[in-house]
Length: 148
Image (cartoon, rainbow, N blue to C red; front, side, top):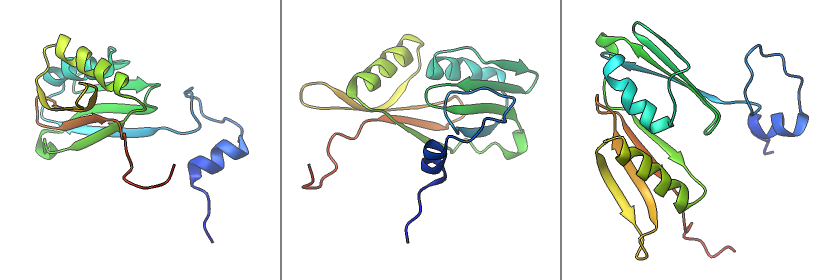
């Protein structure tokens, strides 16, 4: 017997909202990334997310994002900062990936990998923060199946 995911169940059930924190979706991801030092990586994440941190103090910065629905924090934990994270955000269209590419390049962020179709529609963009954590933005254009 297959059961629906917790996200599907939340969408269907429309449970009461008890959270003191307001966000647009029934759930969202929380990613806490340990870094050697927070301040030098903040400009990268401002460019990546297109906004200033919602909270910032010594050794900590938090980005409260509506799209994608995520609470993302940077935490100074030098002894546990690996710099080898690999994150991906799947997008609905090549235009979204192109807009991310434009924003990243305008901020002076180095693009590690960029994959374009024959008509130059961008389908994948990979960048890394100053500590080496990789972020890939992509759109799936063909699932490789015969289903329509």
